[in-house]
Image 1 (cartoon, rainbow, N blue to C red):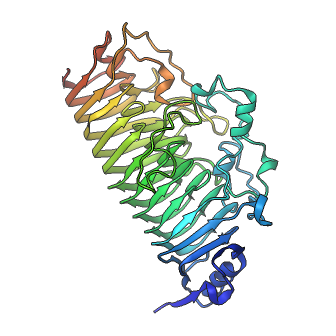
Image 2: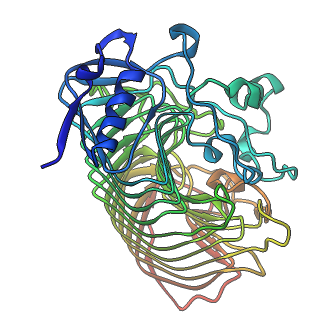
Length: 478
């Protein structure tokens, strides 16, 4: 039986006023030195800067425990500085650093954070600098074009402003056998969880109600995310990425996302049960986000991804996006329910932003199966969109038993959208597409079996399929 190390035995007060950083770190190191064990945080409010996780150590947040992120401006301390990373050219600051987090671990094995307590990122910042990539096309969504310089400076601060700040709740780099289970996480900063280059990662039974990204999985293998409730009106809820943050185009592979519920209600209102709806717009000037997504960072590619038995509510729809040279392949989506969509129910995009090393070429998006996607109450304001490139079409997509509702209402036929090869991928990039229910362009081997679409009066066609070789098509319109 592993030893238990109570943080109060190391001087932690848990009074919400005293900084308990040193006491908790001392308990973690004592457990590590003993060959592993459980660090126990009993009921209390533990105000902290960076907590450094250790291999073989389980952090147990007991009922009534709240681990609170301190504020450098108020609490006389600082988070661990962001480590040097020579590979930070092709992704933003937040993706490129891990130590500037409330809890972080690097090159560890057998690590766990368990509830039922809470992590509150009260003192974290949700902002951070963009990438240092010199070619700026595709760096930001087209919906942000009209933002003033002042607004952009607030959303994307200079790097010097980040020193001493914490901008993630949990940062994990090259860790193995990690379990995050049973706790609540609120106000998580830029990322509630950022896991990069990790293997054998289990995330289960979390309640995440946060002010930017929820669960970000970057260049990881063998990941299971199950039974999580993730609310993120300002950014993506559960998102798989494959950036260059570790200096190589690592794939994200063998991932299962199951029985999760994601949404875009007002921050904090899933936690308190009120499900607030006042916020209408995300920082990218599009409607509130939520959603489950693959991309946008897509250098390393994605394979063998399974998304099943999930709910997306007051949320943008499912998105599979590769624009930086990686390949998305062998994706299975089954039994996903959509409620009150704020964008397209399903968006597949193969583009050519090519934010990567010299010589990066467009990747591939192929072998995608979407079954039993239901949204009788979705009321999406954009259609299902499958958009490849003329020279690099999306390949082998099967859509089976899709039942979706749309707002509709366009008074005239949609214009032919521009190709926008190097633009940031978002469904809104194409304006009003030329169909109100499903629009596909540059897709080879598209099979549709069972497509029921409903919506308001609209001058556009229900379905339009351009520039592809479709194997079969059977659908029921309104």
